[in-house]
Image (tube, rainbow, N blue to C red; front, top):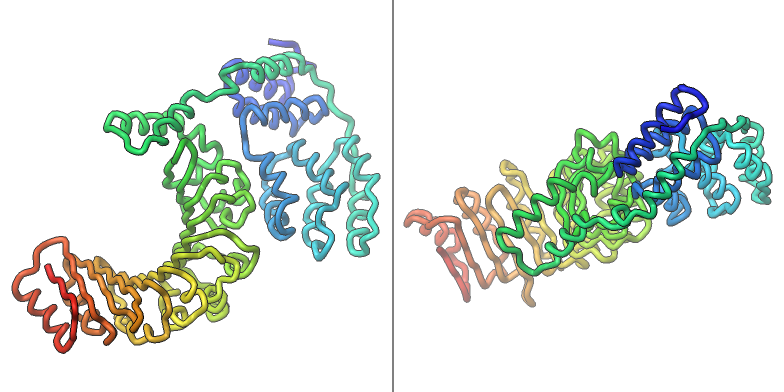
Length: 463
């Protein structure tokens, strides 16, 4: 163990970092180095943190890169999330670089106010000298920069003996074990097969159980459910009881492979979500109109499936109107609505988004009698497929030339609701197919036939 300048708190953290590097635990080493930085910042320690960050593959570099990508509002949201971050030289460097390059120049005053608040925490003399050299001719930005320069207070760097840390980092960087993850390679190979044998399924589960949290990194702490595909995170649900931790994890590179996400309003709009195609927002997950306004009418996103049930009580009509247009979701193919949103089914059935999507799914609560009202609104609808779900009952209506003329019904126990809905089906109905989880007795078949009395059906299939 090397001799450090003194047995202070920073020395203890450095010893912990060195031990972690010897145990091939770069994430633990990075955590210890950042803890040391908080009490003893120095340029040499900053370089060690940068190297350890690459070894640990943590999400900070991706989050920082996102500060200069996309819209300034997204970048500001990321800065706000970073308020809870501990001191980090990588953040200081990126903040300084942004001030030097000024990537946002139109209407981004709020972004730079937030950035200046973060920059005021910088104490590195070298970075402060770079900020002092910043010049701008933007009228509204110049006062922000001038005020920041007055706040900056350089501190003399702490001298630390980092030779052993630097040697261990160099060895870890050159180590083949660091450069390759054999377990991940095995999982990729398994999940790339078209079909897995039972033994392969068992091995897949074992790999995820042993290495899943390591591959997920920091975001594992807030996930209630997840799946991997081809070796990487593909679908996940954020635990609603841990949603308050999500802002600090937005931008983590582990999110970049996720194509299906549930209950994650703090994460879903971040630029790192490049693979996102299916989004599920359950009750009370949308907080504040800025979130849904950005989702429905903001920057365009390639989301193909959207499931939403929550409404902003302050402006529900505006939200329904924006959802009915969904201008920011040009690739949307399936829209699923339930909860408070499905109450506005008539408006949605006649909306532009209903004409554009292939499938519109309306999910009613078991005790909601308004499900029957849907069929009266179908004359306005142009959606290729409308699905009505209520309890264990599913009706799928397919549109033909005369209107919705083909219906498939799936039911199990609630025959009374099924017959009531079948009786209310549009007059354009020509084909009806009913499937059940069990056999219908004579009285049940009679009830269904009575519901269809007077219909001229070309096809009528009952179980």
